[in-house]
Amino acid sequence: MTNSTTPLLPEMAEIWQQTLNWQPTTQQQTQFQQLYELILEGNSQLNLTRITAPQEFWEKHLWDSLRGTLLNNQFIASLQTGASVIDIGTGAGFPGVPVGMIAPNSTITLLDSTRKKIAFIDKVLTTLELSNCKTLVGRVEEIGQQTQHRQTYDLALIRAVGTASECAEYSLPLIKKGGLAVIYRGTWTEEETTVLKNAVKQLGGEIAAIEQFTTPLTNSIRHCLYLRKIASTPPQFPRAVGVPHQKPL
Ligand code: SAM
Image (tube, rainbow, N blue to C red; front, side, top):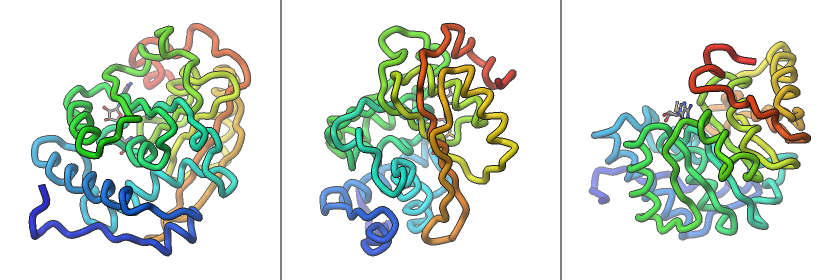
């Protein structure tokens, strides 16, 4: 798989330590490298990601994926003890695959509507020997109405799948009462908080926290929105395929 021209990912030991108070083990470092190489290779057949330069890949895919699982400067506790996690619209495996690597006691379901992307992730999981991760093909609007998935997850992760209200409608029906949804965003405004609050309330949730941070290499602004489920989601949510996008709450 490796060829001599493939640049190695930077290790960034100090930055991991300073920003997440964590460092990858040698095995995790190898898995990051394998993931990077598989994505470069997969990109020749599938449009997986435009982020391919080593430092950019490290910051925007690896670091950013893991930063979202930090709340109040600590990894979300249930991840360490063993959570049931779903990554909605995982694409090439972000944020779910890096999260699966650092949380071996948790089970990560990687959901995407594109079968080819899921076939690619299946290959990644086999190569990286990530037995705590599994894949699921489907539209989240349908998965969220299925009893085997609805209100069964402790944690939902969702990055770059739609507006915040759309992401709230996709994620909150899937999590248990007391569970968390993490919506990864770039910029964020107070006005957006007002709109999101209204959507989240209809879905049985509340905004538990909004964290702003800067990425460690390019100092770009990022936000993560942490939604807590406090009541059952009414049965009409998520609405039919396409409706959350066309008519956001
Ligand atoms: N989360 C990844 C990331 O941040 O790199 C991928 C983001 S990509 C822009 C959006 C992904 O969400 C695509 O792979 C797409 O197939 C998937 N997706 C979009 N709408 C979806 C839906 N309703 N149900 C399931 N997957 C969906």
